[in-house]
Length: 52
Image (tube, rainbow, N blue to C red):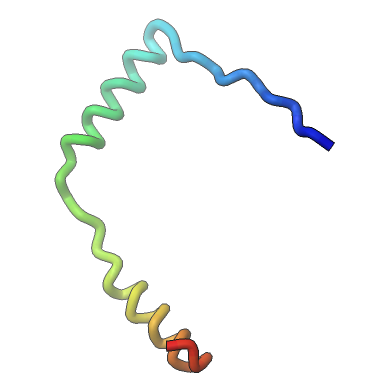
């Protein structure tokens, strides 16, 4: 059975301006997220399951 294709909402006016400003701010943020702790936990799980 096919799924209905829903229309994609379009931002207009102040909502669009607010979205663009937030997107620009996020893009300018050069700070990187450190996932080393999560990688270490994932590797420990994989080692315990003999998958690494």
